[in-house]
Structure formats: C-alpha cells, structure tokens
Amino acid sequence: MALPKEPRQKMINMMYLVLTAMLAMNVSAEILNAFKTVNASINNANGVLTGNNNNIYSSFATKLADAKTAEKAKIWMPKAIEAQKMSNEVYNYIGQLKDSLRVEAGYKPDGDTTSWTDNLDASTRLMDKQGKGEELRKKLEALKKNLLAIDPEIGKEFANKLPIDLTVPKSQTGNTNPSWTTNYFHMTPAIAATTILSKFQNDVKSAENQIVTYCHAKVDAVAVR
Image (cartoon, rainbow, N blue to C red; front, side):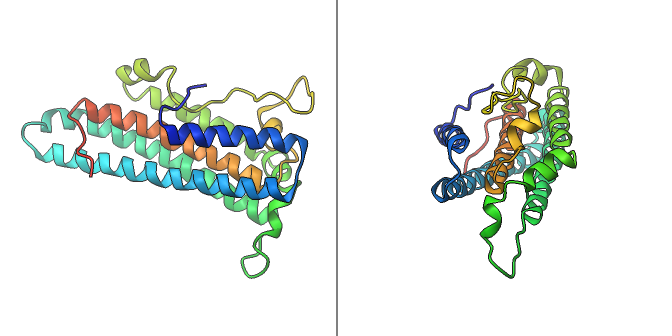
C-alpha cells in the first residue's frame, strides 16, 4: 500500500484504521460518532484536494497561453485532463453509492437524519447482495490501470506509488477465504461503510493529484495562491 506523504493524509488514514479495529470489537454510540467525525474530516480533505487540483488546471491554462511554455503545455495538459476525467467518473460513482447506502439504511431527510447510521444490513444488501462492492472494486482497479497507461513516463513513475490499494483487508472474523467486498462491507454499520467509501474517494483524488502534479512539473512549477 502506498503511504501518503502529507501529515494530514497520514492522520486521516491512522484514524480510519484505529476506528475499523475498534468497530470489530464494539458498535457503540461513541464509535459511530467517531466515524461521523472521521468521515467529515475525509470529506474536507477531498475538498482541499479538489481545490489543489483545480489550481493546477488553471495554471495549465496560463502556461498554454504563454509562448514560453505553450509547447510543453500542449503535450502534458491533455494528459492531466485525461486523468481528471477518469478520476471524476469514479469519484462521482462513489458519491452515488454513498447516497444509495443512506437510502438503503433508512435515511429520511424530512425526519430523523441520524437513525440510519447504525444500520448493519444496508451495506451488506447494497454492496454484497446487489453486487455494488465488486462493481466498485473493478472500477477502482480499472482506474489505477488506466491512469498508469496515460503515458509511459507516468506508468514508470507511479507503478508503485498510486494510493489506490485493492488488497483484501485482513478478516476480523477469522474467515480464511474472504472477498474484498465481504471484508469491507459485510454487516458494517452504515456510517462506517460511508466512511470507507469516502476513503476510496480520497484515494481517487490523491491519485489524480499525483498524476496532474507530475504532468504540470513537466511544464513548470505551479504558482500556489
């Protein structure tokens, strides 16, 4: 698994791992509330990454208009835009899964908006029984492959660096032949499953950021606002 370099990213991943381990032992109101906090933090980090990426795309447009950098920008900007399109497609798909999960868990916007969080069956139905977990895994797998295939230099640079980790997590129940979907989503409280999905969104945005930052560095350094 590729480890993040940013301190904030390391902190988010550490909180996520600790809460997942605690979840295996106890499903309490405190644990559920902790997942809400981590989910909000990951969503905030995703917003920051989106802003950083947009800043790079804006800088690309400036470089394209500058005669001194236009030639290289014409080469590398389309590759960055390609990475953006691929990542946005999977990111938005995961967002739709999060919405579906809340509905499956009984979320009602005009009623109690918190009662859905401890539902243990919704993630199993949606991700396992309805096949959305395997569908998600395949989309993440394809995204990683396609990002690396954008350019040979990108493939060589990020072959072992992209933060999209598809290894099957260790089973907490002793299951010796677990599936990827089972270990992430089987009988997982809805808020915890939502947090897991937010983490995958973060992986997607982080991968996009690595690729577009690399492409931009091939032209010039970004002017950070």
